[in-house]
Each structure stands twice: as C-alpha cells, then as structure tokens.
Amino acid sequence: MTVSSAMMLVEYGRPLEMRERPLPAPQSGEIRLSISACGVCRTDLHVVDGDLPKVPLPLVPGHEIIGYVEEVGAGVSGLEPGQRVGVPWLGHTCGRCFYCLSEQENLCDRPLFTGYTRDGGYATHTIADARYAFALEGGTSDLLLAPLLCAGLIGWRSLRIAGDGKSLGLYGFGAAAHIITQVAKWQGRRVFAFTRKGDGQAQDFARSHGAEWAGASDETPPELLDAAIIYAPVGALVPQALKAVRKGGRVVCAGIHMSDLPSFPYRLLWEERQILSVANLTRDDGDSFFHMVPQIGIQTSVTPYPLADANRALDDLREGRLQGAAVLTM
Figure 1: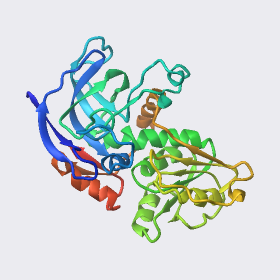
Figure 2: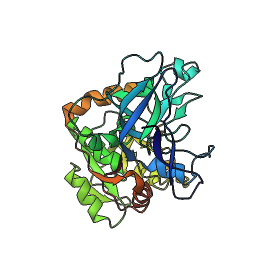
Figure 3: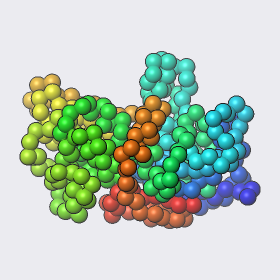
C-alpha cells in the first residue's frame, strides 16, 4: 500500500472529509502504525467544533489509537514491526522545560497533542513519537482496548487526583465513568453516579457497571461524598458537586474544555473543599494504568463504526445517543 486514507477536518464546524494521501514515513524517533481501531472522544468534538484554540488545517482527529508498528525510524528502541501499541492524547513533549524536568510532562510548555496539533487516528495509518506509544500485551481485542487510551487514562489520572476517599461521585456517566467505576470498585471504593435529569437509561447503565446509587446531576446523594469527578463539560456542575462533598472533599474537573463556571457562594467552597483540574497525562499514568488493566479485567462497552462513518459517530456522541464509547474500525 502506498496511500493512506483519513477522515480529515478541513474547516472548523463542518463534517470531516475522507481523503487519500501518500503513506507517511517515520522520521528519527518515530514509528508508522497501521491503525486497527480509534476511539471517539468528547475532546474530538471540541477539536472539530472549534472549541479549543484553533490550529492550522487540515487535520486528522483522534487520540485513542490502537495500531500495529509497520516501520520504525532511526533511534527507536523497544518497538518493532508487528507489535501492538496504543497512542494517547499527549503525543510529544520537549523534555527540556521546567515541567518536563520536574516530572510534570503533562504540563510541558511545548507539547504536541495527537489528533489536535499532530495528525491522529481517524485514518488507516499514522506517525507517532515512539516514546509516547504504549506496548499493549494480552488478548483483549483492539476494539475494546481503544477507549482506554483516553477515557481510561484521563479517568485514571482524575481518580488519582481525587485522592484516596472511599465514596466517589461521578458526574456524566459515559466512556470515562464506565471504565473508572470498575477501577474504583476494584480498589474498594463506592461509586455514586450523576446523569442528565430524566435519563433513566444512563442511570441503569451506571448501576450495571457497579454504581451503588444513580440519580440526576441536581439531586442530593444519600450521603456526603469524599470526592467527585466531573466528566461532563458543564461548568454548572461544579457548585452542584461542591454541595455533594464533605468538608475537605475534592471536586476534580476532568475535561480539557468546560463551559464557564457560574458564580456560587463561598460557603460551598469553605471548610477546605478543593476544586482541581486535570491536564493531559504522563507516561507514568499510562504505565501504572495498563499494568492494572489485566488484574481488574476491565470491560469496555463500545459501539463500532467504520472509518467512513466518523461523522455519524461524532453526531451520536454530541447528541447523547451513546452508552459507553464509540470506536472507529479500519
């Protein structure tokens, strides 16, 4: 094969277009992958809708990539043709700034993001920085692994930041929450799920994955919680979550984009409650998470779409027609 097919963003706010382009060649430190599956993440919506700072187009979205190494560039060690790898959102860091040198590479001053500032996985092939490709062993199918590359990894980082509390609230029960509920239960925590008002189907979905209580996002849980994680990109949920956590509790905002926070009385924050945000991930997050995955036996709920139906997958995600995660298959 000498060409690669890709669903490309050529104009913000417009549907993606299928295009062919020459098969890319890896440079020093890079690998070329034949992609088998790519998850569809809410961040992809923010990219294609222009909610994030705009970057030059055209662009191939997608950052939950499962693929097989086809070719390695000079200087690459530890990866070889035929090996299965996963490529996440954080696709490159400079290795020289204050953050990289202080073990905070997720805050790098000069990063590249897969499917945003470098081409991603809505394609048959892609180029990746070999340092940011995770070798994936085991027998789990590519389709089921794909959501772990962002929904799983960012979910895991948000769970770490939430602390060690035993009672955990999850606002927005989609791809990330249905994975992290399984992790939290494995750790011995109790999960309380918050969904859109009147969405009984989502609440049933949450209970089927281990949540012991599920209700609308404006409901009061049956007890005060140790921490809450907000996966829905809705700023109005922050004061709701603050009401739901105990003194000293944490509210973690896990998305890359969120609508503006409304004003709220200081008393909701008082008594040492905290609001924190999650930015990207580190390779340590990936190593620790994928080490746990076989032990936990995480089961992802996915809806597959052929690559050519990427626009339909994005629309279904935008309109809330999905339970679990959408995954493009090549």
